[in-house]
Image (cartoon, rainbow, N blue to C red; front, top):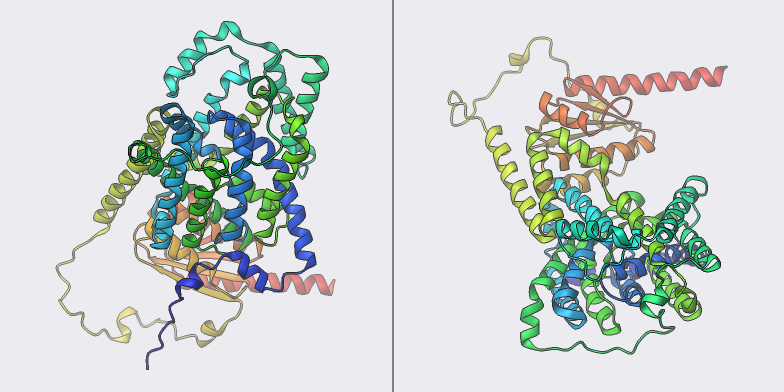
Length: 577
């Protein structure tokens, strides 16, 4: 009789994590932890939301509306315990281009259409396919966006008098170069003070809110010294002290057709950014999100936020990571983060008028620096010529052409590279019969070791075997299987003898498992890896003492046992001493 796995129902797959957390005997201690985490994230999100809005070509209050309305819905309905929603730096280029081309109403309409697309993608359970985007593509688009964000802040960092700033990078740099005669040294001083403050606080008090402290210090200095710098008040007249009443943007079939390309770009980038952020939260917390439920929540948030004047909502990696590090227990922390932002706006809105734009530009410059995945970029360039080509071509397309075009071309190149590697891995041996014949037990030599029954029941060692091509399409499944290993042994043995090829995404998955095992105090031994597979693993940082390589599975098991025995003897000697 074959046991059948019961498929989860529709409602089970799309039940928000909030409901799951509340069912887990959520108590007063959990609420206190979520309140502290929510306040911490709100303090980080306050200057960031305004800075991203200004860089996107809209007023700073719209960034706050996005975080308040969109962030609350993402946490309340999402499939991740720790996701924090709001405006993201990744959208700056697309949003500013949409505003320039279609105006504010066009941006709001495009955001709502993208929300409907995200909901459809989630309800059709297509979110799983987003995981097939190759690792080099995610690295390049993050790094490319960081370069564009930094370039977009040069005007405010230098205090330039520039009436119209081009959107593309090269014309932008040319315009900035032509306006260098209008450099404002006070703006440069404010930006330097803000950047230095962020660096110092993070260096000596890493748990303090560096962004808000640095921006407050810069605003105070500029106000007390009467520095001639542009502020939120002088440029935008400050921010209101309340949420606006909900209002539909102007809707017409012609306008829908015009903004549809922007909406598709918002939806594609929103899928990637939000699910990437959820994966980061999973890796930090050891939990697993439901991608399709998360996309439905993102869709609802992107439909609701424009009704209150907000724009694109997505999961934000930096704020989500801050949420996890601050001790959040569940989605209530994200909901409270939105409530705290609303309270800040209701109470302290007049103070925002004194914030220098150069200080907010410095905040985004630091964010851009942190977004550049420098180590991963260098690793992929060294890993293989194929990965390096995919990385560099898509990076250049993102920076100098278009973000969506870069992602699509990168995915296409990654697919072609994989097909090429698969073709090289195929071997045809015509000497084999159609049906493989039985083999005698003596075929492998008379010195064959007997079956060891204790290996199957040894609680100290877990043996895993990976078979087949381990590439970006299989990485999510392998990662989930490794995460489901319930035991906490003293050693893991991974058999790579059945893996013909390994790409950078697969190596990154194994590196994450190795890092988790290392933190648990468990040794990892890899046996049977070919020289090519071992090279990729080594490039991605899997070296002693975190990982030990052995020629065969049997050698790896022997080494694991020897390591456990040695550790036991050391413990015994320490106790005897």
